[in-house]
Image 1 (cartoon, rainbow, N blue to C red):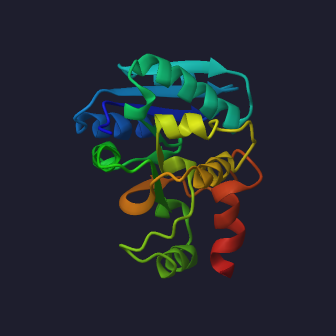
Image 2: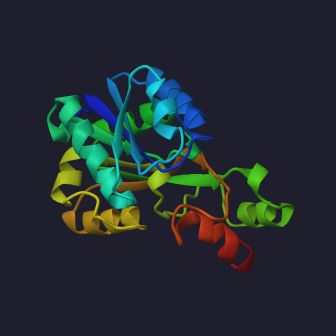
Length: 227
């Protein structure tokens, strides 16, 4: 089923230092898309200028919520974005990333191409911002990542899904973390077409203390050097 619109959803909690960089990259990717792109930022319980900065970007819709829960924030954003797109959910692509991330210019165009050829779920790779890591951490990351061989690890910073499959899987659960892994696990029983790809790798923050106790920040801090 051909993709006719894209909904980009970005949860953000106190990301005033990084949200502009993220949105600049998303809008650059949107400019490369052959279908309309609807960008939604969900400013969740922010006490800084995240929402104010996001409002400055033309074409970006900002929802301000107080969920303090990334699963709920993503779900709210997707529901709103699906409403804005006004296309059949089978022809809507939901592209997820995070406010501390930078997407490549081909991020959306490549996902649309895959979706239009029948792919329902794309599990994209991420790499940390090496400016945030030690030399030993950088070496360890390179040792575990081979170009052209995506590891299939699920990251909300680079996850694409067809709208109808998202609905069938009942969307993001109200989880404080690992809501992305949970969604993909529920998609696995739907007999959908899923692929892992590193063709549009997303750079995400290499900070080692994140917005939750677990997640990618904990992996960088506790596991990367101990694999």
